[in-house]
Image 1 (tube, protein in one colour):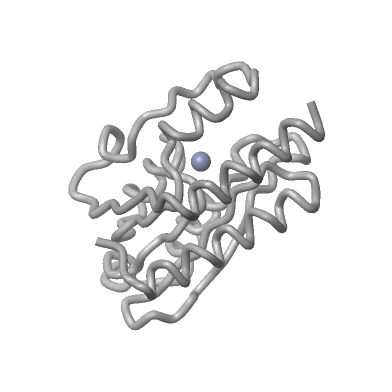
Image 2 (cartoon, helix red, strand yellow):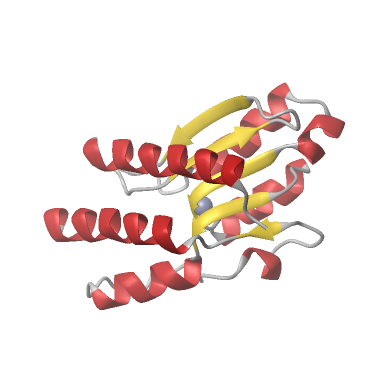
Length: 160
Ligand SMILES: [Zn+2]
């Protein structure tokens, strides 16, 4: 279930995705929120430098591993504009983070990119639940997913 607080955090993720787009990166943004609702860390995609592992969810998992005790990691939520890829889902699982809420799903992204004529990525687009166990996952949110779709459209029609 997605409530108003979740929507507020997801909107921030979409904003971060926009900021990524503005600096030439793929439009993905994510934030890490503690059990009591504090935004602990934010990041957006940084793959334009050539390192295609620089995803925001991976950065947040590393930040959590370095800055939060295990019990707090388990209660923290990761909000993200687009569902975790398998690498980021695995990182989320390895460091023991809690719930995940996404604005748009990997399945939606695959469809959007296919419609834009973008070749499929080498890494398979698996649902988070196919990569990690025992994780509460919520999403997508239709109205925000449409905004994310527009950011991807802009990224792929501008640059490629
Ligand atoms: Zn990823």
